Length: 149
Ligand SMILES: [Zn+2]
Ligand SMILES: [Zn+2]
Image 1: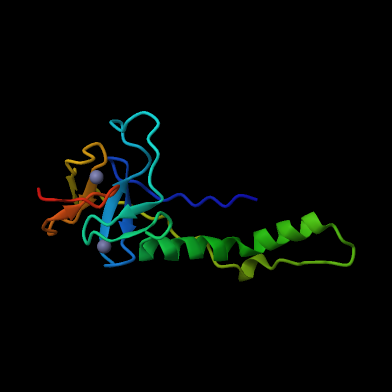
Image 2: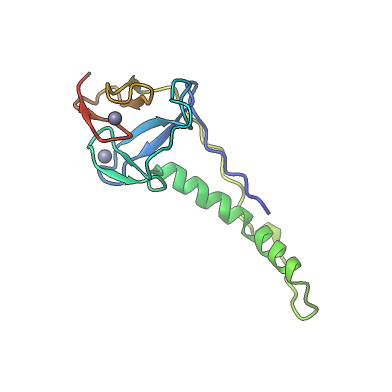
C-alpha cells in the first residue's frame, strides 16, 4: 500500500527546507534545474546556504513537514495494519480496524511564494531561495563555497 505524501513546491518549483544545524529555513529546487548539466550526480550531502554546514539529503525536513508526515501516517495507520494482516492470510489472526478512532488526514501544506533567489558563482545552475532578511555571505548548496550577493 502506498501512502501519498505530497509536499508542495512554490511557483518556481522550490521546496521549503530547514537546516538541521542552524534551524533556519530556506528553499532548494526540487530535482535538477532546467540549466543543470546533463547527467549531473548530486552529492550525498547538501550545504546550508545560511550557515554553511552540511547534512545528509534526508535531514532537511521543516517542522511543518514532519508534523504533516506524522499526521498522514497516523491517519493511515489502521489501513496499513489491515493491509499487512490481509497479506498474512491466517485464520488465527483477526484484525478489526475501528476507522472512527482513526485521526483525520491533516490539511495539505501550502507553499507561499516567499524568499529571494540567489545563485552561487561556482554552481550558478543550482540557485537557492533565502529569507528576505537574510544577509550574506551565503553558501553553495552543492559544494559549500561561500559567496556574496
Ligand atoms: Zn544552517
Ligand atoms: Zn558550488
